[in-house]
Amino acid sequence: MMRRSILALLLAAASLSATAQTIYKCTDAAGGTLISNSKSGKNCVAVTSSADSSIAAPKARSGAAANPSPANFPRVQEGDQRARDTDRKRILDQELAGEQRNLEQAKQSLAEQEAIRNGDERNYQRVLERLQPYKDRVAQHERNLQAIQKELNNLR
Image (cartoon, rainbow, N blue to C red; front, side):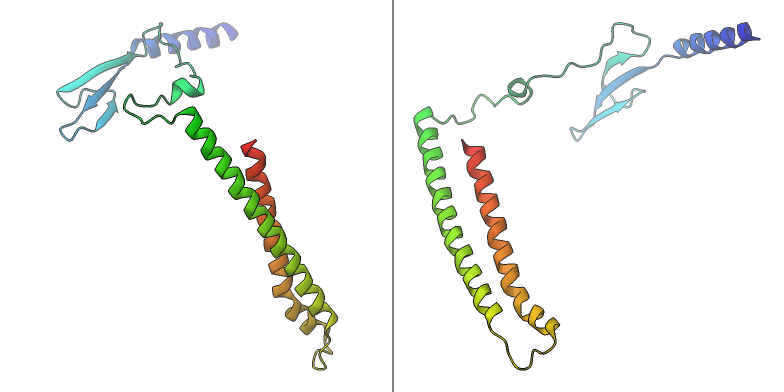
């Protein structure tokens, strides 16, 4: 019984290799590329055959080789790039300082609003609703600080 199963598997594998197909890369009239198992135009080139045992999976390329710059791509001089990086760091430092000031002001405004009790706010939910925009502003400035700090860390 086991021998029949193995024999059936071997026969199935042999029949699959006998029906191996060639893969074609064709270019249509509009310049588009089509990959097919049949020639569908005049400009077709056989890319591979599944019966070909020398086919290997494409190798992964390194980052620089995977995306080479075109020959006419403008190059930035090292000194210019260093100056740009210095300017970027200076701008990010200024934004960080400004955002820290904004955060302190937002926290101060929130503290002032928390100290105020209106007579019509006997229900604590009304107090929370009044304070929510101030809390949102503080949270926004904290997120901005984190984002700027992340940019600065990526720059170094």
